[in-house]
Image: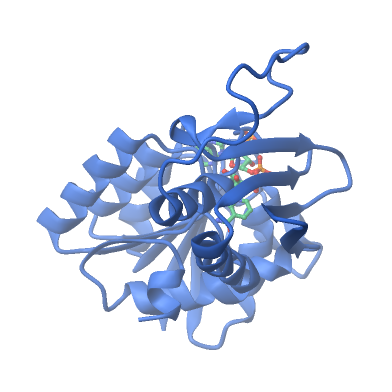
Length: 266
Ligand code: NAP
C-alpha cells in the first residue's frame, strides 16, 4: 500500500485527489493538509461517511506523524516550492500539479531530489488528452510554424498563462525556430490585446471565465488553411488517471521527472 498525504486538500483539485486516493485499492490516505479547516474530517469535506483522517494545517507535523510515501500537492504558486522541499527533507516523494513555480525554484528542487535520491513528479497537466495535444502541436509546428495559443480557464486561477500553455509554447519554439508573426510595426490600441509572447516568439492568449475548467486551443495558420488542435478538461476527473499513474511511478524514480509525457511515452 502506498501511503499518501494530500496538500491543498480543501481546494478544487485537492478534493478530487482525496476521493481518488480513498478509492484506489493500492493506496491509503494518511493525511490531508490545507491552510483552512483544521480538525474537519475529510469525509465531511467530500460529503461521504467519516474517514478518520482530519484536515491539518502544518505539513511538516503531518509528515512526521504519518510517515507517508508520497505527498500530492495542488496548492498555490507561493506555497508549492516550500512544500516540495519539506517533503523531500522528510524522505517523502512529491507528486506535484501546482503550476506557476519559477525556473529557479524548479532547478533548486531538481538538485535537492538528485542529492537525496528521491523521486519527484511535477506535471503542469495530468490530463492524458492535454499531453497528446501538446505532442501533436509540436509535430504540427514542423510543417505549420505560424501558431498562436489560446488557453481558457476558470476565473479563480491564480497564474497566467497556464503551465500547459507555457509548456506548449516551449515545445513549439524548439521545433519552429525564430519566426515573426504579424507586421513588424504592429500597433496595439489596447495594450496586451495581441497576447503575451513566450521568449519573444509564440503568442499566448489567456481567457478567464466562470464555467470553464481547463481548455486550450493551438491554432496554426498556413497558405489558405488553418489547423486547430483543441483539448477540453470538462471536469477535474480528467486529471485523476495521470495523478494515480504518477503516485505509482514516483515510488521507483530518482530525481525530478517534469511532464507526464515522460511517464507515458518512454
Ligand atoms: P484551489 O481550489 O485554490 O486549491 C488550492 C488549495 O490549496 C486551497 O484550498 C488553498 O487554500 C490551499 N493552500 C494554499 N496554500 C497552502 C499551503 N501552504 N499548504 C496547504 N494548502 C495550501 O486551486 P485548484 O483549482 O485546486 O488548483 C491548485 C493548483 O493546481 C493550481 O496551481 C492549478 O493551476 C493547478 N492545476 C494543475 C492541474 C494539473 O493537471 N497539473 C490541473 C488543475 C489545476 P486557500 O484557498 O485558503 O489559499
